[in-house]
Structure formats: C-alpha cells, structure tokens
Amino acid sequence: MGMPKFNKGTPGVKPKFNKPGGAATRKGPHKSKNFCIADMETSDAGKKILMYGKTGMGKSTLAAMAPGAVFFCPDKGLDDLDHPMGDKFKLIPGIETFLDLRDAVNQAEDFIEVGGTAVIDTVTYVQGMCADHVVDNIKKEKGGVAKSITDFGWGKGYEHVYNQMRLLQADLDRLLASGRNVIILSQLAKSKEIDPTYGEYWFSRPDLYDKNNAPVIALWVAWASYVFKIDWATVEIDEGKIGAASDQRVVFTKPEFSFEAKSRGSVFDDYPAVTFDAKNDDSLWRIMFDATS
Image 1 (cartoon, rainbow, N blue to C red):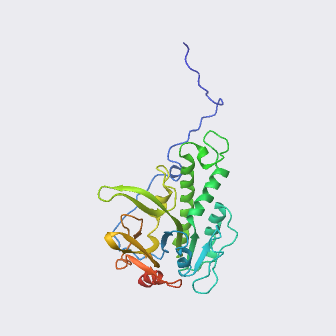
Image 2 (cartoon, rainbow, N blue to C red):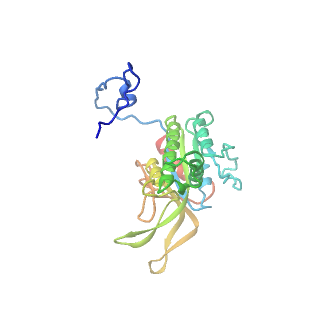
Image 3 (cartoon, helix red, strand yellow):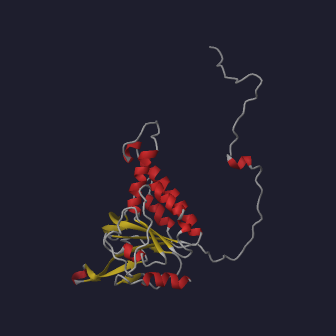
C-alpha cells in the first residue's frame, strides 16, 4: 500500500494557515489591565421592563402612561384603544417585518427623548415575525429553503429564533445605555407544573417559546430588571377557594409559586402588588420613577 499523497500547493509559495484566536490574535499579545476597587456609580441607563397579561387587561393602557411612551406596535393592537390621558398614542408606523423593527429600534434615539420609553407591543407578536424572518432568510443546515420553523430539523428553527431575539436585545441594550427606558409587553400563557407541596397547578408566564434548546422566555425574563404580571385581584371566598374581584386589576411585582414576576432593587419592597383601578391610574410608574429620580 503506497503512502497517501498530499497537495503541496503552488511550488515556491509558502502555504498560509489561520492561527486560532480570531481577531484577538491580529491585535497582538494580550496586555493585562491594572484593576482596583471603586465605589459603584449610579447608572444613567434606562429601565428594562417586561409586562404580561391576558388580552384586555390593560397592558397597552398602562404602558402608555410611562414617561414619554412611544409604541413599536406591528400588530396594530392600538387601533381600537383610547389613550388613558385623553391624548393620542405616539407610535412608529410602517413596521412590517422583524428587520423593520430592529431598524426602528436602532433609530429610536432620534425620536425618543432621554428619559422616554420605547414600548414593544407585543413581543409575542414579534416572536412570530422573527420566526417568519428565520424561514425567509436562513437556509437549512444541508442547504435548501425551509417551509416552516419546524422544517429546519429537531429544534434548529427555534434556535435560530432565539439567536435573532438576542440581536434584538442587543439593539435595545444600546437604546437603554443612551438613557431611554424599554417596556416589553407580552400575552399571557399558562403551563401545568408539579410541586411536591402543592401538587399539580397552573403557572402563568409570558407567552413565548419555552423550548429546551431555545428558551426564548428565559432570554427575556433574565434580560428584564422588572417582570410584572397584570391580572384581576383575587379574594378568598368560602372553603378556601379563590375567586376573582372582577372590578379591580392589579400589577404583581413579586413572584409567587403560580406566576412569573420579579423586581430588582428595593423600589417595590413595600409594593408586591399595585392596584390599577382606573384607566388613568399611573401609580405603578409614580412608584418606580419617583423613587429613582
């Protein structure tokens, strides 16, 4: 058996090899920084808020009362709503695709003042736009065009959605760093959970993909500093059963075993739930922004 033959390349030309390390290698040797302890400075970045609830609970109405709210509303969910303060909703028209949304977010510093708020209404709808973008623009691993998000193979399409959503988050992070706030609105979904103490129960969370290899919901929940659930206030009735006080809505700022919520810092330590009694009740934002202004 003969020795294998190797392609020696062009005679007289020394072959070139890519060194590991990518861009870092081209910049030369690593130079160590000198580190020290310093007092943490208060950040001027905007606030990251994820708010979810069932359709008709007042997500858009509440978001409209945030400071300088401007809506990125591709699902046109504001068409039949009245502004809670009697004003007109401020929105960015013409957002029809996922890339349109990213472009609009990257231009937002031009039309949202420092201290103002970008409202994405809703991220559940944006997730569908993102899935369409993936199908239309990303080829399958072995080539060819996908016909649906599941056509990429086992979970691959959802991984693409997850990665594209990360790009949107990076766009929003740049906006936040410039001093603008961001509110992400989401529809509500329920899933069955099992707890050793409570047994089987329903768990409320934002309506986003929850795939093992592409947990879009975890991506947004981890990103947000505040996760608020809007729901009816609950009251205990006979025999320990739970009923709904249908005339009073509440924003839940702290988690319970049956729903997703969180609040970083101490602003809502005394407010695990904030009532939302009337359309023009902006108590939530007064607690948040007055405490940190």
